[in-house]
Image (cartoon, rainbow, N blue to C red):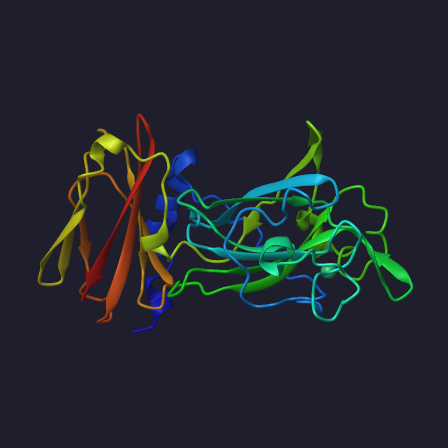
Length: 306
Ligand SMILES: [Fe+2]
């Protein structure tokens, strides 16, 4: 059966138009792009997991960077970020740069680290402002390298190698990596407070609407956390039971097929929700439901198998 026959039926299209503004799907943020320079010559696998790239005696201006990794569904936990950068003097503590002093133990002094996003998709690290260095005849702007990977087994695997730049850097103009449109969202403002430069790097990764298991809804109502949505099946009919939905509030349902492709979207005003699956191909499906409570948005997800 052609999947397109299920998409955008008249009733589904009307349902989307009728959705209250708050329930309409938010546009997905544009994904963070790879940097044109790729890894560059100084990536080393195996960075230690830590939130401080620099020891307390590291020369340079102190800098703190934080951010949240999001996809179309919101914050993503368990994302790995490997970070490496030049010293304030503009050199990398790397075997190919023996003139760069490493201060002894490279596990301590090398300006590198591995971070993992927490339950809120957040990461943060302390370091020093990277120095500029010559690339041919020109200086590269100050930058921090990132390798960003989604959690193992993710429905939307990602391995993104990119760089972070800083607004106002005189060496951005004409730089092959920094002076291109994709690098603009990766060029952040820095504030100075109590002698520390601080910046926020929002990272957007693809996918999410199908990665239901990893979705985080920070506004969910804790009082209803113990209620699990459940499904009853009778023949080709599915009934979905949800936590209490305020009277008159519509529930938006999105169904994804086994490939994670959205194939049906509908609005329901009575509970339990009912789906006639007589025409659905056999297979596994994921269903996501969203509605509003007086405490904010609420969502549930269930698996269906036909
Ligand atoms: Fe670099």
